[in-house]
Image (cartoon, rainbow, N blue to C red; front, top):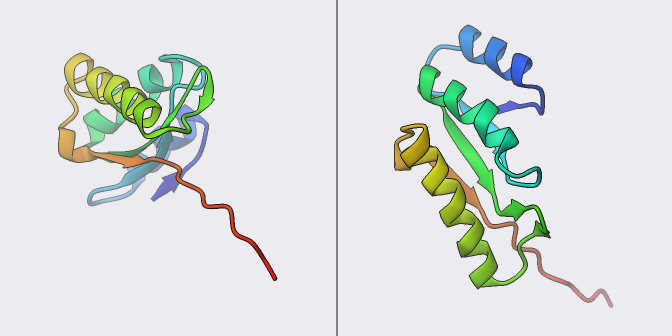
Length: 101
């Protein structure tokens, strides 16, 4: 797993490691900017990518919003950049409030 927010670092790591890498992560917090930088690299090097359900409004909180963000990221990654759908790993960022006694 390659975990960085810097595109040059991600690309350097993808060039160094043999086998299938997973890049953590993409989101749509800044619109398409991060997807436009990271997804083409992942496709070029055959890496998978973790896609977080975050968009310009922040973390999607409802199932409907999560699905909407995931569909946008899937559409861009697959239809615009030619990623294989199986190389997208969606993290829906579901957190549970827990009461401590």
